[in-house]
Length: 233
Ligand SMILES: [Zn+2]
Ligand SMILES: [Zn+2]
Image (cartoon, rainbow, N blue to C red; front, side, top):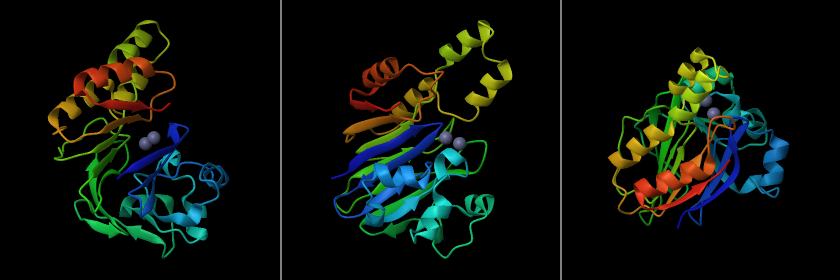
């Protein structure tokens, strides 16, 4: 059984604690380590590893300190180079190549963003499957048999457009957002393209503080999927 705990979820910092009951992992570590420690009740040592999606600070701020205290941090070669990490605790993930971490099987895959970014498909021994995809405007892959989905739902086109028309959002900022982050509209399309028959929970993560509407996003995703939708931010 998969359990998800959100420690932080926004452009100010992202970190999610997940467990299958045996092996505990952290998905992204975009917080100062002292905040991370506190939010984890000082149980950092219970982590079997930390999976890092990309080099933006809201996803990897704690990495240098996590490496220092001996935590394995899994990331792409590009993210390692971007961060300048030199430690045997850095474990390189190759997209489309499955690895085992404790009782989890992890498949990393490329996501479209403004820097190299990866998502993760995490499978437990008893066949539960968690998808984690953030900081992307598009995911070209589809997945079967997912039971848990954690997906960015950053903004919606109509909120952005209304702000552009009101003169409070520069058009190039809008264009940058829609080419780097997942909109409500694209999340719906993505979810509809996937096999949702086994899905138990959909978590909407990384909402923009300025360009989202949590209650509306939750309601609309619930309508499209017929699933339990959890929202953070
Ligand atoms: Zn981010
Ligand atoms: Zn990013």
